[in-house]
Image 1 (spheres, helix red, strand yellow):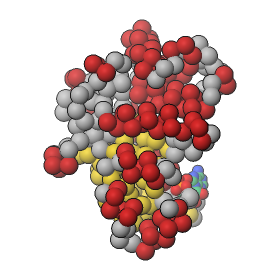
Image 2 (cartoon, rainbow, N blue to C red):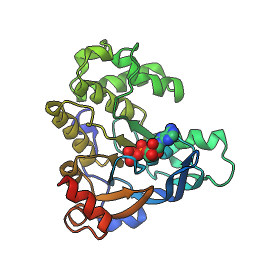
Image 3 (cartoon, protein in one colour):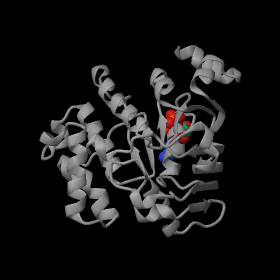
Length: 287
Ligand code: ADP
């Protein structure tokens, strides 16, 4: 993608936020056996907004992302991904959301019986970037990127390949298109992980601690790429331990503890003047 193909302005504006809700989660609940991992999670994310989730290990952050992506089936609550108005202008690697499907709202009440069609629609709206990259080890870089769009979304191979190559070019990995994951550094693998997510033309990008498996000297490149995507107006939910990064990139930070969102707010306010004692204790340990 050349910069000319990308939208000039981020979509998110605090003042028009009310009219542009993309994701609405209410009372999300998830248990593993007897362990109530998400008690009742409420979230609203606007188009073009970046929300960072922070909180202690085991508090439920990854589970929230996995529920949003349909990788886990919640036990209760609702998830809505609202229609993207100008879906016709969508293309891979642009922040405007993906094609035809994004014109319809997905709305699922997990207290009721869910259908495979509803879950497939939910999965289709977001794409996840994993902590450990999760690339297919026996596929090349290019094969990794085109797999989802071709096999799951049933889009034409030629079109998907053209888009995939443009995305790889964007992140400086054209020369690695035929390499296998084990031949790449962690930072390169994670950039492939991000390209693979973009190739799915999601409305929502989900990042699960995208730099915590990387050697310190490789973290910067990946964070810069995520920041670029944020500046282009992609809607994102990012689980991270990098508080400085969260402060810089996120429009809002939510502190998760014990399966609930304890508080959320403007990054400066939340990091400097948390309202809740639990947030204060968590930040005190880290800062
Ligand atoms: P975080 O991302 O905040 O570290 P997680 O969402 O990974 O937290 O985990 C929250 C809790 O759910 C932890 O107690 C974890 O052990 C438990 N958990 C997560 N996934 C599973 C699973 N597949 N089976 C059983 N327990 C799980």
